[in-house]
Amino acid sequence: MSVMDLSGMDDALDFRAALVRAREAVETHVTRVDAMGHAWHETTLTDLLLEQAWPAMRALPFNQVQEGAVGADWLWWWLDQDGTAFGMLVQAKRLHADPWRIDYGYRGGAQLRDLLSAAEALSVPPVYCLYLGSKAFRAQFACDAHEEGDCARCHAATVSLQPGIIAAHAAALPVDFSIRQAIPLEYLGDPNQDTRPPLLAGMSLPADLEQFLYEDQRGANAVARHLLKRVIEVRAGQLSVDVGDVRVAPDQVYKDLPDDRGHLYEPYFPNILRGLRTSPPDYLHDLLAGRPVTATLPSSVAGVVVLTL
Ligand SMILES: [Zn+2]
Image (cartoon, rainbow, N blue to C red; front, side):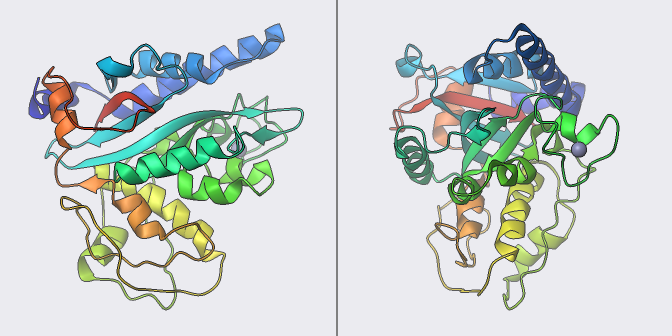
């Protein structure tokens, strides 16, 4: 099946409805498991998410690592009908209670470092899929837009994405920072979300990048901008703007990017926008066509999840 064949299914799909349905299934599962007094696990929740969001989200495992795929990372590619693609390397993490924490630093920090370096090798942003439990589970962490009673955003936050560049920073902060900064998965690709970032004082931007940031965006562009917006919001709380040249991938949509990094571990424009491409990478074409993947990819990657926008 070619990329265009897959995108042709898109008319029949309500992408956001699929993500909402999947999140509701995850929320029901964690609520029942909490009532049982048992623990819920990332791999179970990811299976449930993929099952419920199919075919808006489709998992394509790599043959060579199928056996050891438990706990591995997945490459998510958000695909537009015109071929524009946004990739991210995703690792699932759950929110724990007693004490409240997200174990970004699992295995002495090696797991976080491996995710960041594998994402760099793939020229995509590292991203955490955070399973934050039910609204009742984290009742003490009300969201910033909290509504008394049955807050819709707190429900939506059950399955959230957190850019890895923020997570690397958040690992040293109280867990409520991560909970508040994470973006509900179902908000990505939702045309009703305002994904324009705040202005960064003292930074002059190339015209194409300024258009990307402040004019209407849809699809893969909007997903990339939503993540970038959240990173810029975190960055905006810090001092000093430092602008220069950065490396780019050849099929990257925006090539002339500021290298401002603030207190984050690396420049955030390229960290996010290296994943936004004019066309999907060769290994995704191979997978969609049912061919074996010949590209050399980091061994931690279990496969690809395709999200058709
Ligand atoms: Zn809320």
